[in-house]
Length: 554
Ligand code: ATP
Ligand code: MG
Image (spheres, rainbow, N blue to C red):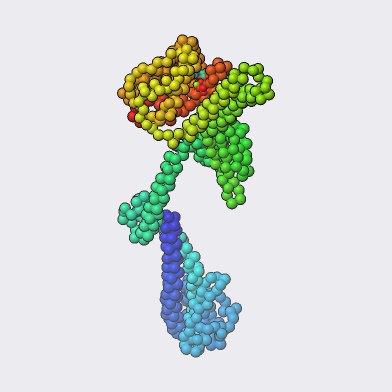
């Protein structure tokens, strides 16, 4: 700005100086020409008088140092005398303008310019009494030479103008710029300012407000996005088409082994897994791709989706989902189906074999009841198995149709004991029930399944003359029911596995006692549905205690 002001001031001053110079020079030149003509005229008059009186004698006494030229011309135009040249050598002057004019009017004057000498000659002529003409001339510098002579002072003046312009530009620009520098652009309308800047500052103020609103909205959206993505259980990563990480949420960082500095880096530098590499290559080619990754013992499904522009891939979105449960559930389902088929196959084979023997009369007379009872037992086993499976699948679906009821714990357990008494007698096991009279808010069918299965196990996996004690305890907020037996016990490593479907510690023994391995799975599910807690305490060869803790008010 300073330079601009300086240049403008300089230019104005320069133009002013030059114009003034031309104007003054022109005026002065014409003024001095007038003065010089006047002087020349006076001199011509005086000289004419003298020549009229003295004739040629006047010229003899003429000083050599006169600063004008004097020429005496006869009436025909021939030069009679010239103080600067030989008269005989000079040409006829009859055609000279000043001569002609003097001859006509008595006096005449003219001026001529010599380009070679860059000078102008002024002529003044007067007719003498004898008809001759006396002419005086003096030289005058041309305007150009006058200007050239003035060049030095003019240059000095221009220099002065430049210095003055510099100083002035400095001061003016400082004075102009100072309010601009002091302007608070964050609050453009807070201070007084140049009126001319008002529209601009109002515009800045408006744009700033709009920008702030947009920034707030953007920040709010970013906050929402961050909150949602950081609390996502799935990993989310956004990459550019070259695979450079643009965004990673918390879970994705964890799963890909990345950190805050990973943004801006190539994903393959962060995670060198071959699967990720292949996935990325496919996504870069515009194909959706997925793969499974094992991280910290869990299985994750990684989905890569290309984000398409009009023609090319603009970016890649990576979504990482935990599919451990899904995979396990699928495996369990497969295992379950296999187990069910297997469990159904054995009794069916037995039934089919016995029936075939009976049909073909290949059974010894008298043995028929044994075969028939085997068919009956196997059929019962199958019914029990199918019932258990139905119960389990019902529980898997959440047992929504079952309703909670208040149940008196002791009488309810007593009815189960009564039902199992015959079985206990057969196995020579004593069943006993004791405890506090209390009520429970439970789903009776599920409560019954729990107590029945646990007591049944207590009898089945007991020893001769063993005991199964059922104790109901009222503990203010809870009711705990313990089923304690003096049976074969469960090895420590099997304490959790016994709740798996079809899991049996000793398969042959379980089969002997008619177990299919579904009882405790039903118990576990029923306990979960009733929001109760189940604990196992067992010592091999000493006995097992299963304890269920029910919340009293739920
Ligand atoms: P089901 O109950 O379906 O007739 P099951 O009794 O074999 O068959 P679960 O009740 O699920 O199946 O029990 C699983 C396994 O846990 C049993 O096979 C047995 O090996 C072991 N088990 C369960 N309860 C006891 C117990 N009280 N004492 C010793 N072992 C037990
Ligand atoms: Mg059982």
